[in-house]
Image (tube, rainbow, N blue to C red; front, side, top):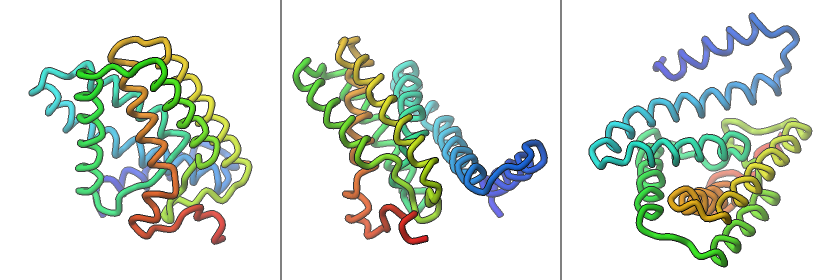
Amino acid sequence: MNIKQRTLNKFEKFLHKNIENITEDQMEVALYGMEVIYSLVTKTLLFFVISMAFGWQTEFLIVSLLLVIIKTSSFGFHADKEISCYITSFVILFGTIYISKNYSFSTLSTSIICLLSILSTMLFAPADTEKRPLLNARVRIILKLCSTMTALFFSLIAIIHIGFLSSAIVCILSVNSINISPILYKIFKRRYRNYEYY
């Protein structure tokens, strides 16, 4: 058993011990959230060291925080293998930083991208996986509402045009829209809307 699985098992035992009458659905969401947090923490530590080599520490922390906040309620496609996850995350993080440092989106393009991202979130979020199907309809509605409000909130910030932050938001919302849509699931022949199979 690897460190990640041991951490998740300990977290599950902690929840059972300290939260009375926790439901299976609540446990499912909590464990998924912890798995996301664990992966993000380990990747963040590695990538932060890399960002130091470029002198992009502040930008890296901003982009990482945006990803965490947005993905926490929208979920989305996950790579099968850890190495694929690391490579994809590297490209998304450092690609976003590079673009945001060197390119400023116009008000029109920002507005269009943000509008499409909000619509995508309303249609597709939360996007579950075969490993973590979201079986509870009420939980799905709550997550959809949270992810839509999050996309709307960040879109308003992006439209204000705060330099690097605005460009980073546009990039991350764009990536998230693809990540929660059926596109990647179909390309990699993965099951979509997994709760429908139970």
